[in-house]
Image 1 (spheres, helix red, strand yellow):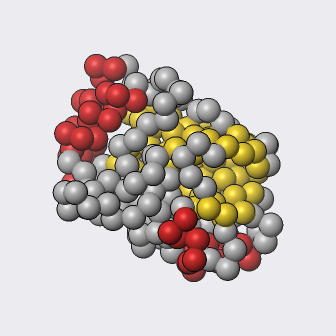
Image 2 (tube, helix red, strand yellow):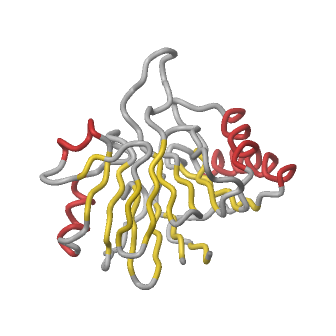
Amino acid sequence: MKLTKFDHSCIVVEKDGLKIVCDPVEFTHHLPELDNVVAIIITHRHGDHLQPEKISAILDRNPEAQILTVADAVEEFNQATAVQAGDSLVLGGFQLEFFSKDHEAIVPGKTPCDNIGVVIDGMIVNPGDSFDLPEDITRPEVVLVSSAAPWCKMSESMAYIERAQAKIVLPVHNAVLSEFGNGVYNNWLRQACEPVGSEFAPLASGESLDL
């Protein structure tokens, strides 16, 4: 299995020639043409995760791909399937387990929108814009951790790494940072990895991990 990171929180997971795409977006780098996509997972409706033109481009090449997203984002698409915490399905040989419910608060006490997290093949934990973790997985192979956002502090991201106890930590949600800022934030996240024995893997757009 191969995991490739692209801009911001976009990842592509490939196994046996088939692909799952999460939150496909473009900001500073071009998202390549993707074939053999069985599912597009949109964690929530915010524009830094949901760009209709990028989703349309993937569907043009993969008309059978399923869009899986939260209930309050379904209306953004001609056809999509709403998923919620506790849902489980198999697509193209990928086992998908969904968790989480709410996007982390930006203004205290107010939930911005729905949010869905996904576990791919029991190995990759993508919480979307939340600090939630699936209840039934301990020490996952990979966990995605937000670097910077209006809704998170560095101390919260570091605490999430400590809770997750993942073998590999992949920083995401970092398109809002300058090159210098990204280096500063990565240094703090790396420090949180060391005490729990997690490998820190700050991938640039287009770089991959073999799992």
